[in-house]
Length: 467
Length: 95
Image (tube, rainbow over all chains, first blue to last red; front, side):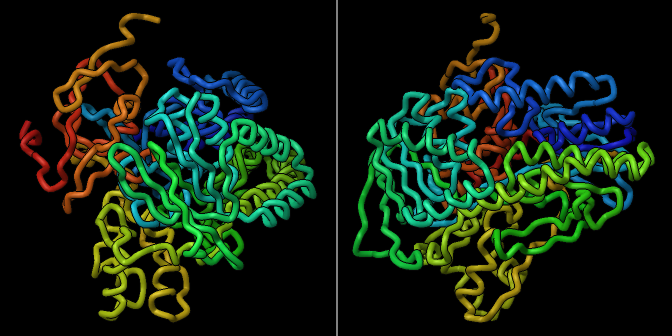
């Protein structure tokens, strides 16, 4: 069993910031990150020189500053990269993690005195006919690939909702790809309304960036369909044929107004939501945020969860972007130090106060941006009986309907009858929509539920279990 | 760039150029190979989330099945095979 003071799970902006603040107070820190490079998705350090696209100046500046801070305290920070936490104990404050090398994975147990969980976000995945075929990517996934010079095809359709669509489209343009269309569910009116919200929160930098991306898209004469949804994807020889449908009042699909668009590959996303795998496994309390429409871990303003000495920060708490995530990480790092006794509570209070003030303004920005990803409930009307809901176990909407007809009353019933959420991803994707589907199918009001988390949180071999 | 950084990996027996630091999925997708495996019911699947959580990109790598190719880095001579979920060969486990 290895020992440390602060365990930081996730080496993105929030995790690195927490580690830096804690190390500055004299704590010994261990950062565990599943990637070879720290930095998360936006500030990824690129040691192999594989990043091919020019980076936004603000991102580059933030990255350089953050890694410089980390370098200053490097003697106190152990970094376990390429390592995935598969077990976490909130009472005992220890974790088990393994490296991903297929030949020689070895599991390590790490004992800490406090923890900061900063594991970031997942893509919100709403099923539609054909979404599970090869060549249909999540926007975030494709974005990471494009930034490293990987283009699966020449032409792309970018669809869904939220600012990530513009980000990907911009990167595709930079990479020299063709974009068949950008298709997103927000009508022109709601885009205008949300832009006004961004103005009110003084997020001029975000507006500027968004406007820059939009202008680039217009300049390339790329068709933009606002108020449209991706309804179906079919394979058409080596390409994909996408059917898009116009959304009428209230977001209802107008089946009379469908069009077909061709592309080599499709990218789809309906925004981001926090990855709650480890906070749940840790025993932290969670709640369903009715406004943002996702489950999230209960945290106070000190980033303390319901489990003592376990803190959480960043997009893994609520979607807020990398800048706000970094601020939250600092608060969590300071408070973790106070909890461990490395820092006097009053000193921690005074140090975290200006950060909390900053956080207050920044979290409003996060909410405004989240609203851009909002899609109405009618998006579920696009799902057909044969559409796969649980990709891992190939459970269709029809299968779920039959389970409900056979008496399934909650998601655990559905799981037992159909094997939904029993596959490799352990409900990370189907779990996002199964509550809503159950409610639609049973015509009862359903309290949103989470699946009971199980170990291993990530794949391990039997060798890893030998302790 | 070091010449050691470019080497061959094998996809279903076919040699393909890979660069040190790339994931297997990146090499596949750069060569427009989008299918990673067939499900138990015969559906073709490939990279979806690109970050190791959906597990759709899994293939048989160096005889080990269910390896997430989006999270696994290439090394010289990596053997990658399209996985058939209905026929996972566990004979490697005897070693």
